Length: 508
Image (cartoon, rainbow, N blue to C red):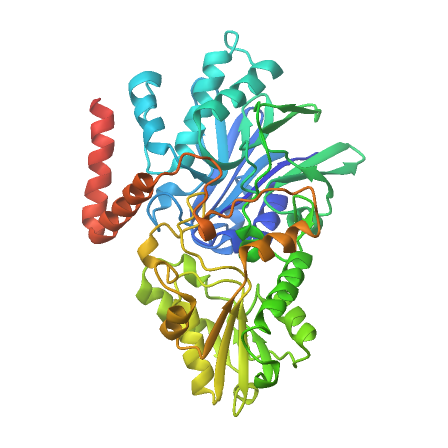
């Protein structure tokens, strides 16, 4: 789950990209980067931390040009706080290319081996995004007519990327001297939308992970980039579009609607806010089958993304809705923080109770999801400490029982509280008096009610069905072992291990 932006404008784009990253900050707080181009020269600045901490005035002045891309990252593939993994990434052979990627490849290791032995390309980091960049560069080299590129060559290269790369990828890239390229994987797992702005000097274009970036930057939304589609904007601001995958079909990640996206975004034609309202309605219908309404005094959301669901649920069952938690907005999302101890500590720093809403009451807490259970357990304890007589818990999504391998950091089954446990066991584990989960069919209906043509979603973290068809139990075991092995190494050992990998590549 990263945020990407690409802008082709008639005036300098550095401020636009910075403002867009601030809007997409919720998609990644680990690192940020901006790359611009002027006179066929790339300018780039990136680093670890929040957008506001990475960029200073001097950095912005060093990013001239009317075309650029930007990225904010949280760790998926690769080490957590390694500045070398900040994006965008850059290659200069056979053409200068900078690229930003949201998602995660599932055949990274295979591609690395192919590139090392066949393509004669060295990968310098553990990031799958660098692999994707080199795959694009190689395909451009393989299809180019001499030293020049044309539209057919560019779109053929994207077709080659689709043939080689598996997994989820929404991409923005710049090719020096040619223009901006955006494309989306054949399943459309990760979101990518684009729009335009008419100025006196000409038409400007903006690509972004979420429509809210276009809204706040005063661009009009045109549409979502289709699965398998590539869009190229040349230096004359002409837009070129082509479908580059033969059997593309839309299967967006349903977790975007549950948790990841901002509620004021529209993804693949569906309002995230309206989808969350529908989730609350469906959850209310199930809740009354298990918990008598007269046993609930108040409905309280776990801020922020569960608010629409909690409000609609409360209205549907006729129980007062109250805000019982105050959120410190300067603490990052807990389920994407490395280490259970860090997550547990941050929950208490992140939320504080409004004691009057709990004391002597039977409360129903509503959250968008339960992933590791760390936050849920701490919140139930906080509610009881504030004087709640009973604490019921409801999740607007089904139990998360499987890893998400398409760009969300939940890779090990052992870390998921629902793996191998029943609902009653999970309730005991988090300390709740009762626990109600949304049904997967109802979750899908919450979105399909708003757009009936959406026939399929990636629901892999709930049911273990991976839309790319290449994720096996052996694959899951391998990435879990790799993750556990990395965590067991000390910082110095991880550095030495990384240097050893780079040295092996260089002598190869």
